[in-house]
Image (cartoon, rainbow over all chains, first blue to last red; front, side, top):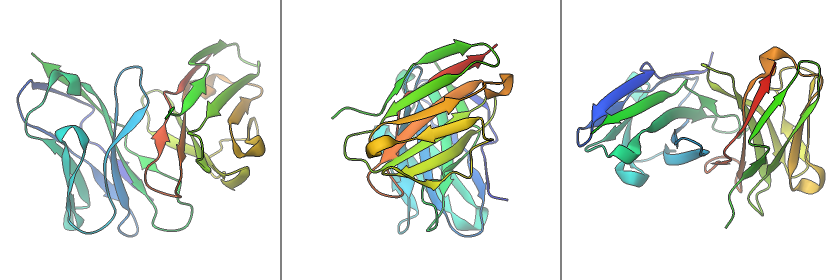
Length: 115
Length: 113
């Protein structure tokens, strides 16, 4: 079955520290891959996406993610976390072809930032 | 450009009552999606409209849920009658293309008591 696993429910990092949020997926083929962020009271905002090409993807707000086919992973990274990055982060996959709206999400990782 | 808007932001109803959620997509976006997040679980796909037609409704949980998109603009999601397990946050998203930049609304938090 298709699924997305975000193994960390809650992560706390100090401001200025580096961050890596993990995402693994189970899918029949290489899917489209996304990271979304939800700040309190806001909708989900797309941070970055991978469709094809360079496996290191740059996104907004200084985030990047690396697609590793051999590990079925798409981990999100940021070299230096800011207090405003405190939010919930969702990894999602989408099908290539077929119904192109059916995004499959992980359970999310809530990020807290210590001053 | 206005984003995706949803109304109401929060609804509290009793079991057995009816609730209608509304989503206004970004103007010009033909694709409109509904998702739901039950507490502690994943955000799950409910259905996908292309203009006024249902492209995929495989995620709709049962026939108590009815989604419409008259005229291909805004969409409504009606739950009738509501059950306790329907509680959660209902997200709407829209996109101009079939896949890629789905823009999400802030969600409607539905509480069924």
